[in-house]
Image (cartoon, rainbow, N blue to C red; front, side, top):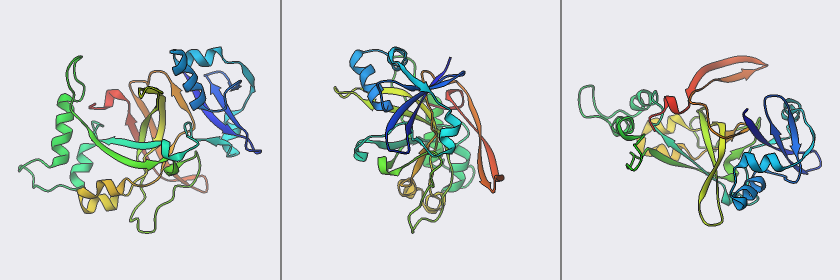
Length: 257
């Protein structure tokens, strides 16, 4: 059974940790956030699920009601926003190369491959190395620190000089750096890697600039392994009705890395 973790702040400002499975959701006793639970798991050298199982319950909660009331936070945060880093990789979805190649293609059909297409093809060939082998690096970019992370349902803002604000549905891996510097993966979230595609389209060297925008995480942190395939639909709603929508496909089965 899949277990999810959510972070909650009541109207009086008190923080709570919520756990949910397919049947119910409850406040977790003894922990106020995901980071404190994960730190305890690292100290005990046990899984996050095992630490959660040992924690008590502090009453049931209606997650949908709390989300509608605006009391759910991003599923990971840090009291010092400089200690939370948002980064991403690109050209890792098996369907991502065509759109990127069209955006900043420098060579006509049949001529030399663009940098984007070459990186994508190298990822297809070597992005999932055998044990003991060195894999091909994906594209990597920096999005910002914790101040760039928007809460579920919160507005996504843009700087005045931005030329575009476009959704990018993604899967986000959430990691906590342990006391000895070891990164520990806590789980996965759905995410909107909001970025400026018009700026990127102007010149592919402006990719880094286009990524310096806010991002949003879905309210739930999935603990444990991710399904091989994740499907969903990205929508823009106006007055409760879809103004625009498009399906998305992710998960390792659909990735070159």
